[in-house]
Amino acid sequence: MTTVAIIPAAGSGKRMQGGLSKQYLPVDGKMILLHTLSVFELSPDIDEIVLVAPEEDIPMIRQMIVEHRGMSKVRHVMAGGKQRQDSVRNGLAAVENQADIVLIHDAVRPFISENLIRLTVQEAEKHGAVAVGMPVKDTIKRVDPGGWIVETLNRQVLWMTQTPQAFKRSVIQEAYRRADEDQFYGTDDASLVERMGFRVKMIAASYANIKITTPEDLLMAEFLIKRQKRGNVS
Ligand code: C5P
Image (cartoon, rainbow, N blue to C red; front, side):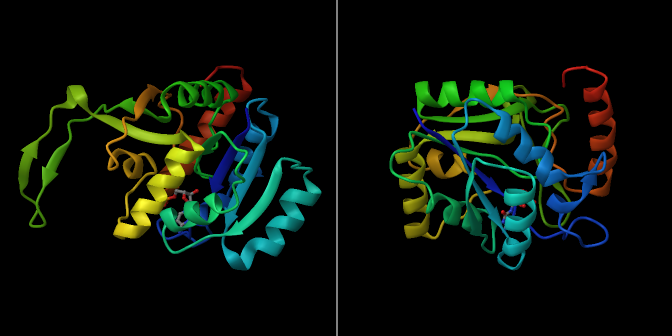
């Protein structure tokens, strides 16, 4: 069984103050991207990593991550696209046919654990398509462009979706092919599989598996890493 991890890291720093892309910001003195890559490098369930980076940063990334830090599983560094989905599509193009499972994980979620990677891969083998997430804590409302509440959704059935998401290679490749054909853009990879009518299994991850998006997330990340260092499992 061969499992390839695609790590999209080609986002820009739009929502973060200072403008530096989030994946390059330090947490506990180490680049977020390196935190994330290290977990995959050490995971016995991952055979290869396809990293997707901004085109202009590829020489720097190759130099720094692949050579200097000994990330031996990083086989390809691909150029990203305009949207995340474009970046993942470019990553998928580098996945070879012998891969059985493709796992996709945002570079800006450094609190991924080896255990969660293992569980996600195992469930993907069983079900063909898996997303991880957690039940929502807040009440979620649909609001119109004028700011008026249209609907209150039933919280009991709502989950916040995270990454990793993992799929049999043929399933995710077909989902991307069809999305391209229909010019469909989703906000995660599972949604492309769902729209084919293929059932996607949701598994519980952790509230600590945060995506670093805003300056507040960086503060939370510094706190979580200290907690991790003290030995509390997140
Ligand atoms: O901010 P967003 O949710 O889009 O970012 C999720 C992940 O997707 C990040 O790791 C980011 O670097 C990546 N991304 C990408 N290409 C884009 C946009 C985001 O690889 N065009």
